[in-house]
Length: 477
Image (cartoon, rainbow, N blue to C red; front, side, top):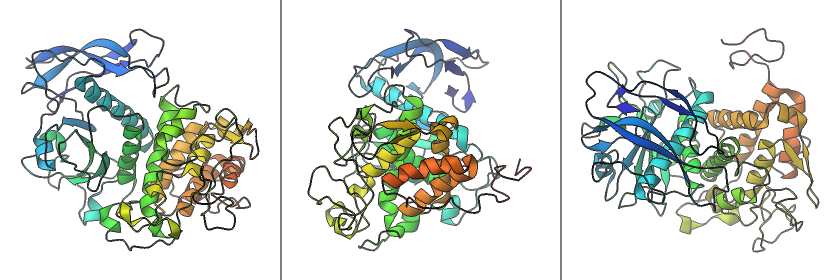
């Protein structure tokens, strides 16, 4: 917890879904000289031990202390800033809004209230950031080089900031989008200090990530997906999709080229959401949680590829185009079994001529395949779709290995679906060996994402990748 730039308290609780009150693991003494506006309040978060999609919201309470500034409660730290932008008609008005406004002298956050929704969104985003930063710390990339500017921060010391404007009156995402993440040049003197990221000494303000949310309460599929865009934005200067590198784009579609970039960026964000579900949500992260992919995907064949979620034996999705000879399904059939973006999928009503398969939200072949991989399972290609363990990936463990592979692929920024799949395969092969690669490729193969006979990627042992592999005695640190 912060008061202005000063850290005044650290609170760590156990994420125990069985506990009526979250057990307190660590708590720093919040007393500090000159802090005359200390305020007692409660931290409340959604209990995620049940079905997070249908269960009523419950709360857990932990008495702690925070502080007020100018009469407003601050939901902000060095990484995530949440602004109550209700009524804002522009980005400037949104940033001029209170960090978190309140009425009266008490800070209450009852379930289903606006206060609860804003606070809950903030803590969920903080959990996504912490989980990602544990792997990306020291590897984040400043977006300044894409503008031709140099970051004043030494290599390895940059960590991006996410500024979230909740519920502005005017759409700030452009087009018809209700939620979005983009880069924001935050460098005007009128911006609040929390919305600026300026290193000590000379040098330009850093580009920050800007998230605009429609409403105060978000569905469980929105926040992790949008945070996936934030990761994509700062994983590497070569961005999958950003106006820096992709506008204007030609009004056509050539699969396997950088025309893939718009749908791929959306597919990637959803894959990141699947990783967060698997790693952070006990109920939604189970392999037989049939509602997880159903809520996340906008496709027509959403259920995970396993016996529990496909008891009728309905076929699963494959990454081939509708006009491909390998596709046995008509484009208008339900469910759609062939979801590779292709020329036939150009939809000018969407505002883009780029390869468009539901603009990347509807690639059930990828969601089903990565759901198997995140659980270290390979499910049969014929009913009843019984799943068998993948022992090498399970020992990695799989959720960690696949999560790291997704982050590595974002850093490589191939900008094509085939290249992205190759990057994931390369990471697994080079860091977990031939057996893990064979397990991964078998799953990607039966969804036709990679060729079944694709050999293990070459050049796994190379100096300078920061990973000790093969015969290397050391690499990097």
